[in-house]
Image (cartoon, rainbow over all chains, first blue to last red; front, side, top):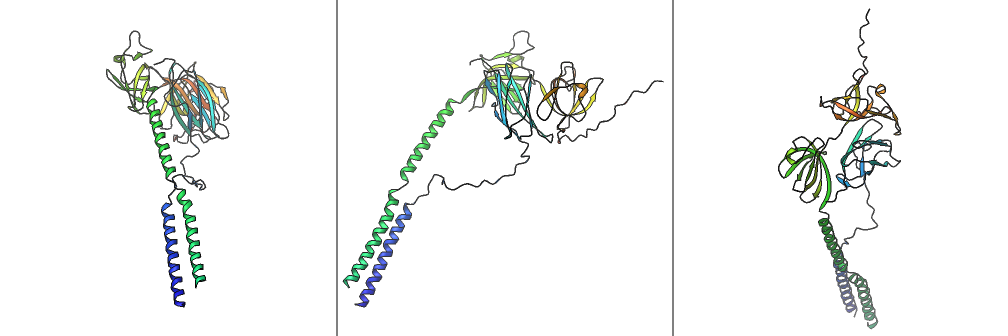
Length: 142
Length: 246
């Protein structure tokens, strides 16, 4: 009688483990790695050292080789807030200083045909960064 | 015995039911339909992107460069970023030059001349189909520091970052403006130019001496030190005085 109980208990435990194992296997096999990036994980950006980080000039507009039917062009970009920005066209210049966030914007008149816009940032230590853009005024349709 | 069996069976039933209950929602939340939808969205995105790219394959562009080679159907230029560009020419292409007195065509364009090309740029072939080709004279810009001032000849020498020194002729028509650190400009003149001053000169090469620049605009920045990359020592040396006649 007692031996019967023990054997029955063992069989019961084994069956239970088997069922639990099958269930666990099923659960694992249905699991897939989500393709979408997890929302809760925030990526930690490590700052990469950039040479001459302060002497950077980025031009937002105009796009190089752009063709426009307007006689004035908006020049905008970003640089160090202490810099002086000189925008030279074929016949005229504009000198501006950037805002506290380094952004600058100004308008400049251009001539008919091709114009070379030379945008220079002069930094307080005397260093210069020059960016060049070609912009064409044309009212022709082709 | 019966009671014990009943308890054991009940426990099994409980375990099985709980396991099934746990496994079923997982099965119900199968991600397969989501992946399918994502794939379809991506395919649709790709199709739209390729269609947009096709539509935007050609756009109007204007280039400036120095002619390196001319043939009957093609002009090769070196653009302002020092990149070689190819411009195709056809019957619809119009040519012009400020110095041309009569008809002007592709055969009149010579190697080394500066041209502005306006046409249709093909992003795939990276060639421009020229519609207007104009021979132009563009101003030169000189960035540097004043290395010497010749008050008799009205000439300043400007040393650039690469170490080259260029003579700049200051003329009556030359517009000289001095800027402070707040970009406030005041009219200036030749007499106010000092050795070592940070300067930007915009002008055209002299017809008699190609190494000289005839300044049309001079921008002075007296509050800004000279570019530290200019290694030339700019010391003010006293100009030789003419001997005093008895």
